[in-house]
Image 1 (cartoon, rainbow, N blue to C red):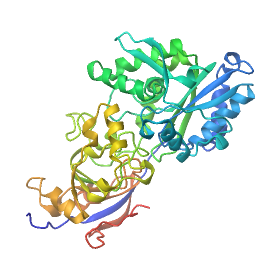
Image 2: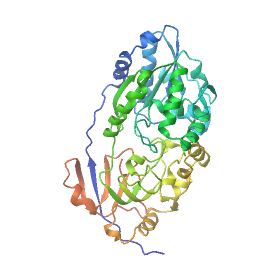
Image 3: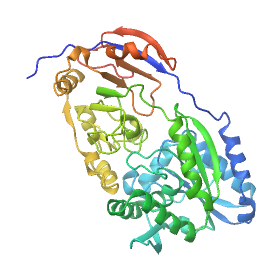
Length: 424
């Protein structure tokens, strides 16, 4: 057994992020759609399938309700289809439950929701596999793709998470998502997204896309309607905006990162690799990736993830309660579908925070425990307020984009545990 370390003192900060925010999401949605040629594309009585994903997009219920209302103004008959690959346990009932927890119901949005895991094969990709498309969406006269544009947690390129990805991973349902992720292993994410996306755009009557970008405070920064013929060219420009507006850690290196929660409602990978610097591999940042974090400790799962612990395998250490909160079946389905089995593997787990941190500190090399670069955050989505070790004080206390909320003081232990809800 290693001797119990002397833990570093911590100080609390608030980061000041500069990014825009939309005050009236409903009005912005109508304005964006009115700027398109939907009135020419859609005839009275036409049916329109609207995609609804599983990500916790800010105000997504309001956005979808506004899309429905706008389409009804054009005389259309809209309905919503879940577009989330294998999420919700890979069942129609599970995906309806995901939407319900996001506030997306027939009553709230004012239109039917048609959920099924069935797909139709609309073509064959140039790489030699079938292109799948949601069965209900395939029956519609038009399909309107609604999705958030942001950096992907595993893949880097001009196209990452956004409208193009929704065309295949979302609307391909579980069957399509499995095939596409297998293809990405042999080719590349960029090639498969473009290849399948072009097939869907050609064959599946896509009438428009509604791209959403969020700011560093997890609020809506931009809503833009994109014509289908411009998905592939406009999305990289939107991705650059999203990358510039996202929240980040204020440091370049850390010995230990303590994270209160991971969850699918917080990031597609449970924890956002764009924030923690592990996009290349689970346990080692790439040469050009920052920040560089030696050890990650996870304290639990978010209530909104409902047991899906995808991403827990990216951490080296966790509390035992995080393992106990895991829905193993759901987690494995999600990680296997995404060809990322290591994301479901269990870290070393401990009953208390003190034991977990003591174990993590013992693996850091010659750094003295009291001088350890410790960073404590609620999760990778909410990074406005966080705690950092005293070794960061000389640098961060002088920065104009940071408000110091208290000077270094001992870790606020409650027995052998860190306080839950510390950042609330």
